[in-house]
Length: 332
Ligand code: A2P
Image (cartoon, rainbow, N blue to C red; front, side):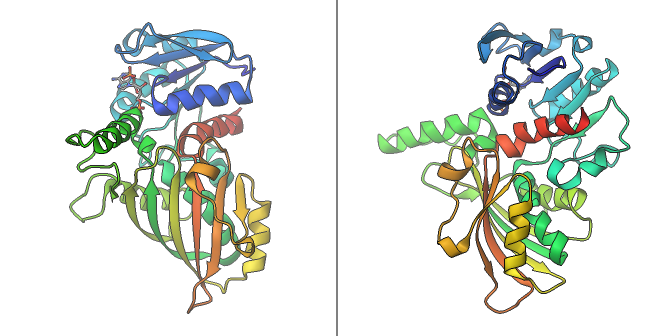
């Protein structure tokens, strides 16, 4: 049972639901739980294990009743309500992009930089990274520890649940329309997502998307400010689980066996050994799973300080709810 009073803001959303599921898995019997969302969902009920909870409207919620507030309700909601929650004495963990770039707020992936929580004054706001960054930095850490990373190039294949429940609905509805030869009118994304691959995020003036820029900035904040990272982020017609093709250049020559051993030691990271000729995929090895999985680990064909690999993880778990619960674990 979780022994602090906790509110989930955005409980009815894609991440909120997984947060409730994880609470029940990790702390069965939790009762001191409040569920909050917008007016649209207020009054509806949800279960955490055997216990039923009624969703409350955020505008009427009193944050002084709780000690911890987990937010996954978008940047605007976080901007408005997270400071209110802190003023009432809550520790806030926010899953939106609202506070990630604030230099005075920690951005945490516990396996990588829990040290950044050490001198942080509570109550306060702690930011959870973008879902692709969370899984990426867990995979990069053993390489950086052993061989010092200089440069990273990433191509992401991100599932629609990264956009929330609207993204999931969009893919399902478009798939049905496509199969029934009905017209497809994109609502959530700029282009058809069913049976297609499109950029993830909005394209900015520098021609990178905001997802790509988040990955670069957040890797610097969490892992090392000197790592040079460029990304191409794509949205693919997958419901759950993000996949990444990662190419890393290091200062030192890479010893693949040493790296395999180091990955095996790292908490929260599974390796699919390339000697077994298997590779992790989103459906079988990410969806509903907690660890980040790395596979197809192979040295570059031309340089011995470059390595290429594949990473998958559940974007709603390690990319959001699980990472937040792990942050709480560190704090408490
Ligand atoms: P609601 O379901 O009532 O709209 P997702 O990331 O899957 O789109 O979910 C977003 C979550 O954030 C949902 O729980 C949603 O509630 C909630 N939310 C969105 N806008 C607001 C708001 N203005 N105030 C409170 N909760 C919000």
